Image (tube, rainbow, N blue to C red; front, side, top):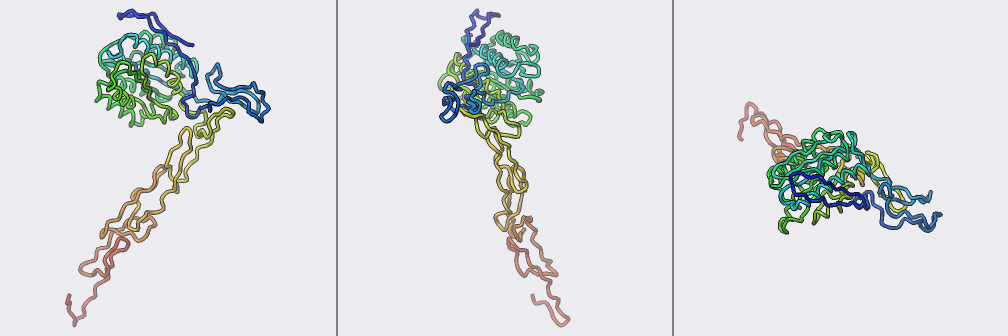
Length: 415
């Protein structure tokens, strides 16, 4: 059990910080590539292991799932995810809708607890490990502290989070995301994460739409993992759908988190502690397979996960129709042989990730004699003085223009 509270106060109501407890359950329960099948891992019939060798649950020290190694009759940790260095910006809503003040304290406690749990169980908070920054937003957004301000000390970071002042006002989420973007702009040698905690609809919607579009489409920013947490305690039923829609814009797609969800909607501020496992597990950015491998088989009750090498497409005869994921191989498809119609040409050749594109030749302007891949050719124009059109052009043949007969001295042109 881990808890945080603080007796610090500023010019604000003197309210005891409610104790936020952490009950750490199955860390990898949300990981598609880190799932124990839920059955008891007791030795199965046919093995020589004692019946009291039971690998159900988690390692008590690392909170990682276990499997029974039937060859050694020992419980062993499933090969879990790689927790790599990351820069994390927490964004906390400090608008008027958060009140009463105890709700703001619960959000602070949740954030501070997350920092300490990440440092304790996953990857150390340090200059070379996990870096933490905090952005507060209400009518305006501002950086409460940047990555280096607390000397990369997790205890100091947690204390400063708990010491954050309440602002009040509207909800400038768009401006806050801009600040988070700027903080992460130079953190390119590591994973980058934005965690947003909010309970109200965005009030700077134009700015919000602009920054979320940029985060989705800008190649230098689209790799940022964005997690969004919404609390519906203080909003009406009609506003819940709006908040959920905006949370989905705040969050990145789930392909960066092993298909785990990147949004969470909770009913009460007191429910935040229940999603701590989900959030900390989201910092597991990839399985322990090598960069050129994928998880072919997940961890089960009696076997560790199995990694296999990612295949490559045989360019130029194949193209990548589906990219590899954390748990699936690359899918290759044969490049189309020529174009379907005789009167078509290859408009765009096949690439590593796309099939060739064909287009129709223009009747009476172009023709294409075969399907070998040659482009459409220009139809010949007969010389009106020296030639005549004997056979008109088709989509697959050129115009036939033989030389006109020359009349002799005793002849004349009748037509």
